[in-house]
Length: 364
Image (cartoon, rainbow, N blue to C red; front, side, top):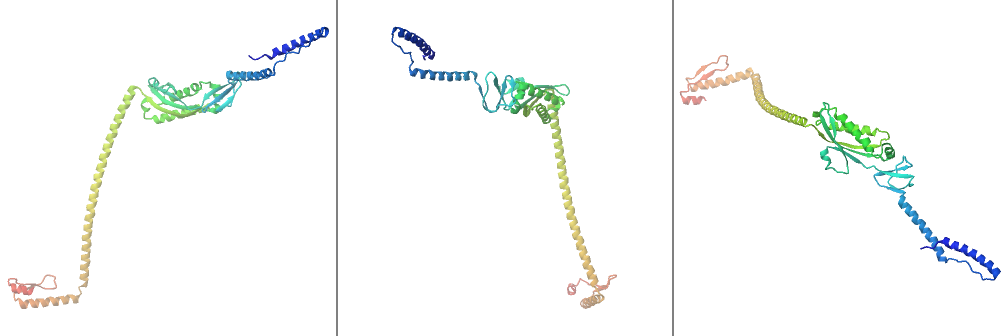
């Protein structure tokens, strides 16, 4: 147990008083002098060290109890609140100090979050770490019930987090994202008939995403960023689904008939093309043969014309002399030879009696 320093001081003062009284008595009575009590030097140093250690221990306990610091992790920002007032500049990831009692720091998540809108039957088996809301029930343009399931990815923007939390509170996503998503989905899908929804799925998905993104990002300070909106399923009434299936079957049958008609038409066109090709081939071959005959006839006519032009009177007279010589020769060999003239002919023809083969052969 440490020695109390005040105790020694009081004892010293008492000893001084008693000593003074003793001195007075001794001066009057002749008694001896007793010096005051002094503590050892080691006790004096020990008292100073223990006081310093006590101070350190008290400070450490105070820090442990009040915890005037906070560590912000990546994907988070801190919001410092001083006497109930939110500071506009967010605390970035790292180590930060604050004044206990007077100040506090609220840590908010700025990573991408998901809201899944799905039917109650699917909720039980879904990841509990992701926010799940009931599917959005809508009436189509004719008042038929339709259910829409979709997933929305979004995140709180770090720069405007203090203002967002100050305005909307820590449940900001239930006040900003969820109402806008449901409102936009109802407005978009309500413009279509239930039968049109499956065929216009892509168009509807684009309209929903653009509507949600535009309306949320138009809020003052742009508190939230919409990363994506995925239309997962359109749940239709049973009668509508059966009707759509019948229409699809009829359309498939119609497409099949159209395909067969087109195929038959193509086959007919193919055969017609082949027939036309064969006819063109025969026509070309006939034309070729006719052209060949024409060319040959023209050549023959040209040759005859050349021959006719070459028959001069002197040439004809020479041929007549040659024929006359043959005629005289035939008469000498065959006394029965007959001579007759062809009408219009310039050269007489000889008819030889061929019963006498020796004379006939001599004429040839």
